[in-house]
Amino acid sequence: MVSSFSVPQRVLHWLMALLILFNLIFSEAMETYGRVFFGGQTPTPEQVGAANIHAYVGIAVLVLAVVRLCLRFFQGVPPEPEQEPPFLRVVAKISHWAFYALFFVMPFAGIGAYYFGNKTAAFAHAGPMKLLMWALIVAHIAGALVHHFYWKTDVLKRMTSGR
Image (tube, rainbow, N blue to C red; front, side, top):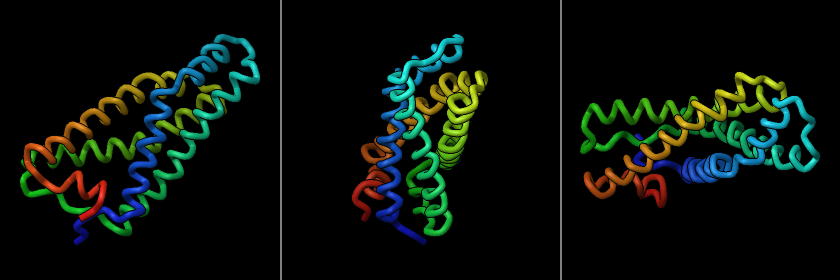
């Protein structure tokens, strides 16, 4: 049984966190592109270039998610701390797998919207999926802080410095 996340798992976690936050915070270029494109106009080269950055970051998240999932299956993950109540263990498992689902579904919806002009995919990507991703991030950070300060577990250390 592993007691901490491996260095590659930790690097992927933080790299993906940065890329996802980048795309969530700096989504204006893609939103502008979407309004222009789905409004029946032709985006300018500058708008396409700026939207490409969002698209490439999203594709990078998708690729890294594949690697991360493979590492998870081959290297394993540390067990849940004993201090965590059973109900919250279930909540943590559901939220972690919801993250993984979004790591795949969001980029594919973005690809459908940007490269194939699918308006439904654009709505889902920029609306409910984006909102769910923000909610999961807030819950994830809150959970890590509760583990560290309330239950005094090593959950935060396992994903930062290891043991």
